[in-house]
Length: 151
View (cartoon, rainbow, N blue to C red):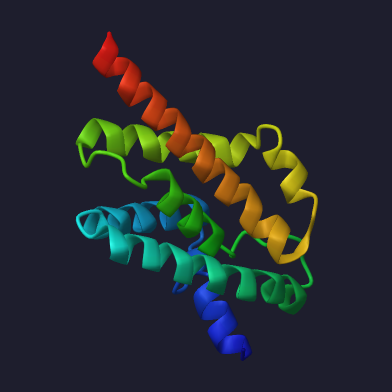
């Protein structure tokens, strides 16, 4: 893939080039996309698969282009993580807000074994920590929603 397309996709259409909080901004954009796609689960899953495959393809390339480990401008990993975070969750404001901040917390604090994935390096290291953070978020939210209905 050419450098231009690699940068376009890795930065998720240049959101990663924003001067402040590019990961949070990409997570917000992904949240909006998730909300739009939630009513059509097939499109939701398809979007997640496409973003994840492209993310694995371009994130390692961006490391090579910039000669920097896990550059902050690479935010396609946040998009993949957010898509997992919101999968099959109710489309309510409290759930959306909670899942968004929970994902950001899991992504920033890198709880075990997320911290192990980050050390892998390359595309796998960039993508997997956010994918696992998304899994943590989704599982936590589903448990919390079920517990809220029981109590």
